Image 1 (cartoon, one colour):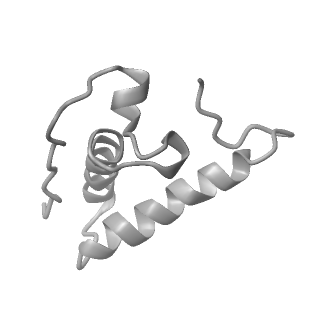
Image 2: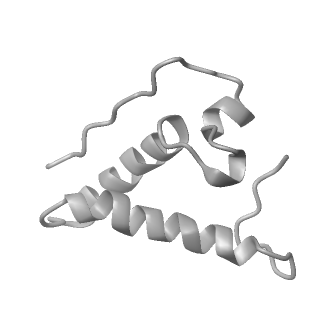
Image 3: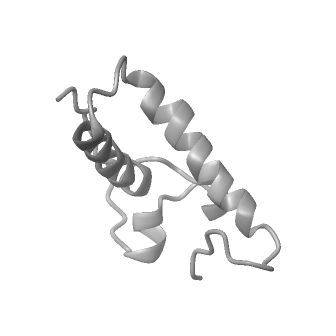
Length: 86
């Protein structure tokens, strides 16, 4: 199973990309009182990627995490990522 993010002409592809952006905005960036600069935003996005793939369960993957499905890591306890306040 390959992820499709925004593939032109593919049914449902845009909705997956839109859901990812919604998760980034509403579950991650809203926890940050102020984004100080571009480097800070880049660090937050890097941390989000790690959190999103190793900790957060996904409905599209039947409650599994991407690391479980695509990399077969199956860790018992998800990695907790601390949001950077640089």
